[in-house]
Image 1 (tube, rainbow, N blue to C red):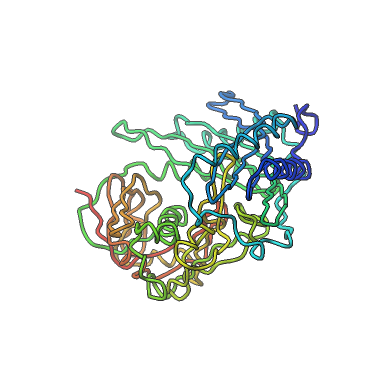
Image 2: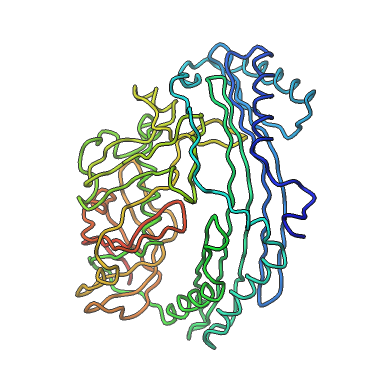
Length: 460
C-alpha cells in the first residue's frame, strides 16, 4: 500500500494548527490564566529483512494533543488523542481543575509575549517523494543492502539484518502568550548490520547506515551494505593492547558520543541543578582553541531543524563554544529564569510532558586537515565505537569501553577490542590537537574526525 493510496490522510500541519487553536480557546474559556497546546500527527513504516527474508513489517499512525495549563502560577500537563469538540472541551476543564492541585511556581509561567516568534522560516524539511516509498520498495532497499553485505566476502557468514524506515509527520504549537504555528517533515533511513565469525569463534558485527529527510539523498543500498561488510571484516582478529598513554583519534561516529555528552554539561538546566562541572566556567577555556561548537536549528534539510522552539520562541543559531571558550549555556524559559537570564530558544517538548532544554543540530565545526592525516602518528589508537556509560558530569571523570584499530607508524596495524579509554573530560576537550575536514552530517549530532593528544588506553 503506497503512502499516497493509504486510507489514513497525509499529516496536515494546517489541520494540526486548527486543533491547537481550538484547544487553546477551550482552555482559556475553562478559566486557565495561560495555556500551551502541542499537536502531533504522523505515520511511520519500518521494514526489517534478515537473510533475505522480511522479518518485521510495521506501519503505524498516531495523533495526540498535549496541553499545559497555568492557573495561579500552578501548572498541569495532560494529553489526549480524542479530538471531538465535546471531549476536548471537557478535557480542558479537567486540566484546569488538575492545575489547582499543583504547588505554585511563578518560574514556570509562560514566556513573555515579546519573546514569541513572529515569522516561521521555511527550512525545506518535506520531501513529497517519501510518500511514495511503500512496503515493497522498503523491502527492496533493505534486501539490496543486506545482499551486498553478505556477498562482499565469504567471511561474512550471518546478519543481524537490514532495516529501512520512513517517517512522515506534522505538528503545531499554540500558546496564549501569543504564538500559533505549524510545520511538517519527512525522514528516511537504511541500516545494515552483517556478522563475521572470528578465528576463536567470536562473532564480530559491524554496521553502516544512511539517513536523510530526502529519499533521493540516501546512499545507494548496495553502497551501504558494502561499507557495513568492510567495517565488519576489518574487525576480524581484534585483540587487546597493553595499558598505556597514547594519542587517540576518534572517528566522526565515535566523536559524536563525546559531543553529545559535552552538550549535556552545557545545559542551563544542568547549571541550576548544579550537576555540571562547567557551572562556573562561562567565558573560560573549556576546549581546544580549534573547537567551535554551534547548535543550529535553522539548518536547511537538517535532521533536527525546527522553525520555532517548544515554547514558540523563534529558532536561532547558538554558538556554545568559540575558540575553545564557553560562550553560553543553552536555556529554555524555565532554566533561564532560574539563572536570571533570557532563553536561548532551546526548548523542546513532547505531547506528554512540559518543555525542557535540548539541542537541535549540534555541530562541532570541521577543521581543514584531511582526516587520514590525523592518523599520521608514531603510535596510538583509532576509535570507531564507544560503548557503555562512564561519564560523571559533576566531576568530569570519563572512562568508556572502546573498539577500533591500533596505529603504528601512521598505519592501522591491527583491530582492537575490549579496551577502555579514559581521561578527565575537561582535559580531553582541551587537548584536542587536530580536527579533520570530514564532517559527518547524517545525524543531529555532527562531528569530524578528532584527535586527542593523550589519553589512558587500558587493555591487558
